[in-house]
Length: 252
Image 1 (cartoon, rainbow, N blue to C red):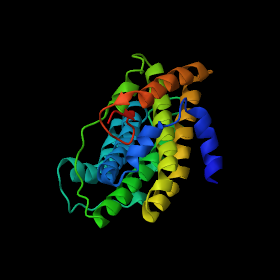
Image 2 (cartoon, rainbow, N blue to C red; image 1 turned 90 degrees about the vertical axis):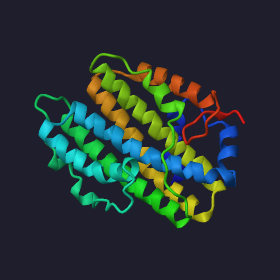
Image 3 (tube, helix red, strand yellow; image 1 turned 45 degrees about the vertical axis):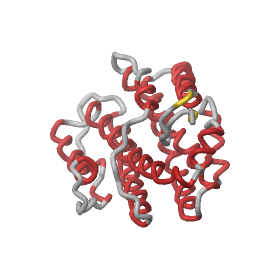
């Protein structure tokens, strides 16, 4: 099952994760920072999907509903409210949001992104639970260079900007899936099982982003996908002084 999931991802990515990153990530002393960054990445993934929905697909009235879903998580992370109650995922339904008129593929975008948002918030909670069971305190971490580097590829006019953001989302999700699979064998049983359990959803996330990009473009996007993929590979292979879940090759 794992190999079947990874075959299209390995074909999609333009390079594999450098061995140097795996070697550093498997070191026990890196586990705390890796889990904290992973937790942050899950929140950022949900926020990115919410931004796409807000900017491109739903009415202003629906934005308030969307932001209510995010508030407990943002209270925990940014306002340090540690006794916050995270919402039941059952309230996060695309039917609760009104799609703007005359938005091509708007409903499909909302449906796929809401499913992703629910899953990323759930993963955030799962990582947080693992951290708490290991007495690892949550903390904010400075962003690495990867996401900023990827966003430099976004064109400045629509709908090309949206198409690029969706392609970038596909690469980020695919890279996450690849790294979960490569790192899992070197982790303890709990983390091994957890990271393997994430593979199916992460693999679907990358496919959802890519299918949306193709549908919205209405034409062949393979050249653009390849171009952004080559840039992603450069970031992954480049020397990187910071160590993050999506960082490049460690310099020390």
